[in-house]
Image (cartoon, rainbow, N blue to C red; front, side, top):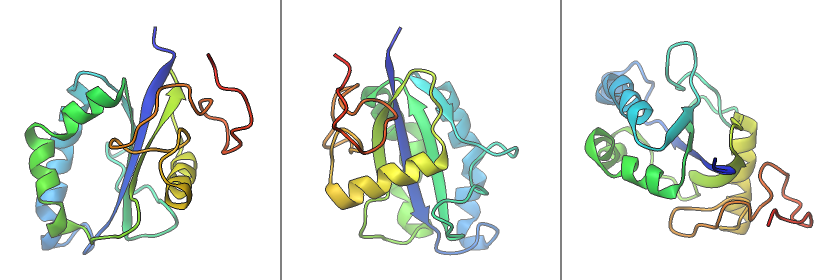
Length: 164
């Protein structure tokens, strides 16, 4: 059994409310894309409300931000899902729906197998990435770190020893 799984969060700043014509294609594709994720090889879990998505879940107390928080087997599984099929099509259209933002809006971190991160944990990891750049505590697909390097769900105090 895998000791660690990969958590990922990405947030986006909406250009308009979700119930407007500008966001119709995005909203119409949420359920199919989420179903694709649920069925993807290496998918473990995703944050969702009773409606089956996370669009009503607050992140950074900002009503214009939406959050996607999920757990995957590893970076290969996440990458394979992100860049194929319907998700790839939606990713290519993101500028139509979301504001361009200069600061990091996505981060990854390893969690102990079975751990389901909360939004506050994801916010803290993203803020850490923004402040310090990629590190074992919070990283990117481009600059990733091996499982266990940050001590799982411990806080930013990296003076604790990492599992061998």
